[in-house]
Amino acid sequence: MNRERLVSQLTSQSGPFDIAIIGGGATGLGAAVDAASRGHSVVLVEQSDFAKGTSSRSTKLVHGGVRYLKQGNVSLVLEALRERGLLCKNAPHLVHSLPFVIPSYHWWEGPFYGIGLKVYDALAGQLGLEPSRYLTREEIIQQLPTLETEGLDGGVVYHDGQFDDARLAIHLARTAVNHGGVLLNHTRCRGLMKENGHVIGLKAECVETGRQHEIRARCVINATGVFVDDVRRMDDQKAENIVALSQGVHLVLSREFLPGNQAIMIPKTDDGRVLFAVPWHGRVIIGTTDTPVEQASVEPRALPEEIDFLMTHAARYLTRDPRPRDVRSIYAGLRPLVAMKNTESTAALSRDHTVLVSDSGLITITGGKWTTYRRMAEDVIDHAEMIGGIGVKRCVTHDLMIHGSASVLPKDDPLAVYGSDAAEIRDLMREKPALAEKVHPKLELTAAEVVFHTRHEMARTPGDVLARRSRSLLFDAQASMSAAPCVAAIMAVELNWDAETTAHQVERFQKLACGYILEG
Image 1: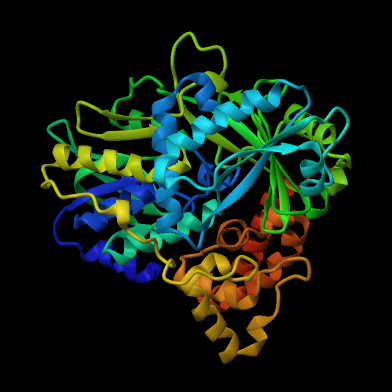
Image 2: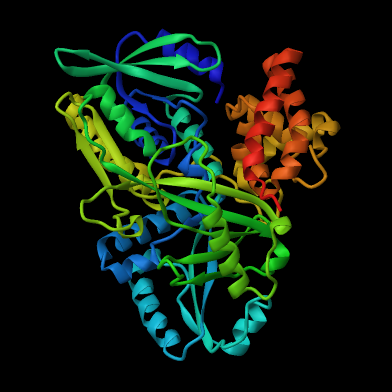
């Protein structure tokens, strides 16, 4: 996946693309994979990096949504459970089963949640994971030695999926390119092109060089997540907002706060949300919040009250109370929820996706969640075939293996998230043993991986490497800041940066990383 080659493909395109996609998060990338694998010509532009926004800031779960059963949204749960099963099958190098324990501190909670989880198991059908079961107090203490035991009565264990969101995004991008798609990160949509009131393409600008592109397409899809309303107003200045923004915040702690391989799920917190404590890549993620916000941001920041909420609840359910200095990283993401009138909180808004078609033919897709990205993509490309008149072709993503899935490495292999690409990284280490060195003692990231990210995964900045190609910024924000000069020096050789550009890239990343550190 070479960016220069893809730019060359874009400029040499003789006629219009079948489909142009704005937005390189889960939804846009999924649509690109679907369109390209059907045989359509497709181009995608992303103003920042792939999965820069919401799609890299999740709780890292591929799940049906236990709490949606309580809301009565059985159709959403059914769809999500089906898609969970397909993701486990099609991306086995990135998605795996994880046990979740629901502790009960009142006698009635075990039977109450147990019955609901049996329904959850049944809805999954043949694509289900392991069945749920009741746990005694002693079993829970054995499996979760750091769980608060005062008042503990027992509990239930069930299984859901876990994944690495940003890594899946990169592998989806590579899958789309493998099928002939042209995908460009750091390329901003500057406006839509119209003829006789109909959208016929878009104007784009390379953020790095300022180079302008006019991209013609038979159909344009707006898949920009929290920014969909901004793109809709490029089409119609009077377009009203269809998205309500909700912020979710997560804390990352060291593994000592939750040793073992079981996650904790608290079904109802003080604000009515589900709270998770999830083991992930040798760390523990605590989240999440659901805070309405007015303004979309590329880099949202956690609010003090959100941090207090998570710290308080972590202390309530863990025997060791986390302090600010224990937080390795803190990250915030914005959810694009489909707005409904007379709804008091974002927690009550639908997680279903919505497809809208404007009078000009612009297709907008929003809502949904990572778990159902494939189904969302199928839906929007079905619409695109009809709107663009590009011919109806069968969707093949139900059984389409994601890039890297040809080899599944043991979970404890440091290169497991690369799947079959791990062999190329190890070849780099053999060719030049110095590349096997870590970029920082507290991070797993090696110099060889940085080279691979730059050459084959379109990493263009230290942030692309440290925040998304690897998850170093989430593992340890302070260490990532210290590693930035080393990462930038490696990238400078690959991308021909001069000393001034390299220094600017380091400064830019370190300024960003400061927002992931909890002071105190």
